[in-house]
Image (tube, rainbow, N blue to C red; front, side):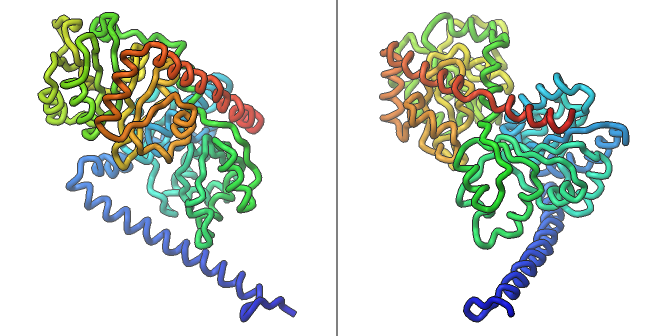
Length: 436
């Protein structure tokens, strides 16, 4: 006799649950097809979307270099930040298991366009949209020995395809939050996708507990591989002669990855509060030429752009605007204090780990709560939060005038980095056990 609960028996509940999963699967696949169509239309009018669509048109041609005899480890990153989390693992894998080939896929143009020539990957390409047809063709061509997803990006059809082919699948530097769909009553379809993972390497105990709450116990708290990456930066040559010439042994603030909202505060401080022996390097997030020109015009002190530095005596200038990409990490090495942008926008603050590893005091805006490392460093008091011009000017005046205070914050930040390294080693121990 079936067990009844109210008006429904358990058999009926299970039946409706599985029907729900089937319907969600059908709906999801319809959405993928419709989305793909509309993105192709949008690409006619949007430059970034054109990169997104056109880049995927060449994916299968690039994948054709793989042969049936190749042993391939596939890494997938949503964008540039996730790539940086996967990068230490890729580097170690190439050192320890050189016979394996590396496939690196990106979802976003902002990741692919910057790292499409990454030298340690045998193929770098866009991930085809998550349709059943694409997944079948992709996995048939690549036939990866292992698939490694970085931090997030959970594509149900890819995960199902990997599970059906019994391909070892890992999540590294993962982080989960209670408000994600996996932990909601209506999240059964996406929750089912997580079962494809053979192991989860997560950043914190909260993520482990959330996965445990839905019956997933194959979890290791390893931390964030980005700490390993930024700690290794200290061992590379970070000198930039033109930056040293500009700094000229004077107190220098580096403002990295700034948006318009950040730049208003910075410019106001430079024009009205900064002392004569205080220098500034601004590396805007937006490389738009008009925006860069407007930024330069708004600054009342002597200002030079990276693109016009040739032939100039850089030590004569007060402000240096970095209108190029790829050198901010090295520039942080000469900073006496840093402002990391994005915290005044809805997108949230950018990477604070790079200035932290150099032992630089950091100031940010208030939009940081979704980034664990920032929350932790704010709690430790090495990273200061401002919300308006007065708070900005107050903290930077204190940082300029109080060397002891600067050193205190910087030491907190550098110690924080050292205390959190080791995620790459933990992950590689598992990978080696599976691939050797």
